[in-house]
Image (cartoon, rainbow, N blue to C red; front, side, top):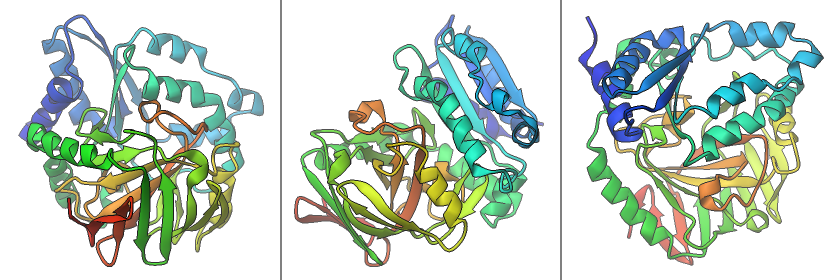
Length: 358
C-alpha cells in the first residue's frame, strides 16, 4: 500500500513546484531506492496530460564508472544526454543514494575532471529557464537515515514533514525577508572563529520557496566576487562525491580563498577548490529558513535550509543572482549561528542567535 505522504509529496512536486502542464515532456531522474516516489510522480505527470521520461540509476553505477572508465571515456561529453535534455520542459532530480560514501576511495582528480566535462549539462539544467524548469528533491533512504543518525522511520517523518507544508504561506514570509535584505549593500557574518564580510549586488537576493528545491526554505544571493574578506569556520562537515570533509576553516582576501584547512580530507578539499579559476571564490551566500529543518543530516538539500544557519558556496554563482562568478563546481558548506552568531546588513544587526530582528 502506498504511503499517503508519498502521494502528497508527488502532488506538491507536480502541482506546486513545477506546475506541470499538458503536453510537456518531464524527465524524472533517481535511483531504484526512490521507486515509491518515482512511481507516484510518473502517475501524477500522466494525470496532467504530460509525457514522463524515466532515468533510473542503479546505486552501484557511479563507483563502477569511476573504477573502470578510461581517460578517453572520462573526457567524453555525453552529447546524446544533452540533446535529450533540450527537448524536455521539466526536470525532476531525486537524490536517493544507497551508499553516500561510495566514491571515498576514488582519485579526486578523476572526479574533478569529470565534473568539468559534465559542466554544460549542469549549467543548462540550473540556468536553462525558460527552456527547462528543474526541481531537486530527496527521497528518504537507509543510507541517508544512517548519515543523519536516525532510524529510517524517523528520517521518513523528517523528510515528509519538511516537504508537506503550507508553501504559499511560507512564500510570503520568505519574500518579505528577501525584500528587506535587498535594501542592503554589504553583509557581515560573525560567529565562532568567524568574521567575514562581502558586498552584494543590487537586489540580488532570491527567495527559495519550494519551486527549484523541495523542500525549499532559504534566501540566497551572489556576493561581489572580489569583495569577500575575512575568515570562517564551518560548523558542519561538507560532503562531496561521497567524501566527507570535517572542521573546515577558510580565509579570504580580495574574494579568493587563500587558505583552506580541515581535520579530515583536507587534500580532497583543496583539490576541489583548485578545480578551476573560479572555484576558490564564493558564488553564493545563503540563509536557512525552513521551520521544520531543525537538525543537521549530512544531506545538503536539507542542511542548507536549516534554521539558524548560513552557508557559503565555493564556485559557480546562479544566473538569477547575476552570475558574477564562474566555475565547474558549486559546493555549499554550512555554519550554525544559533549560539553567538550575527548577520549584519550595512552595520545593522538583522539576525542574532538565529532570531530575525527585522
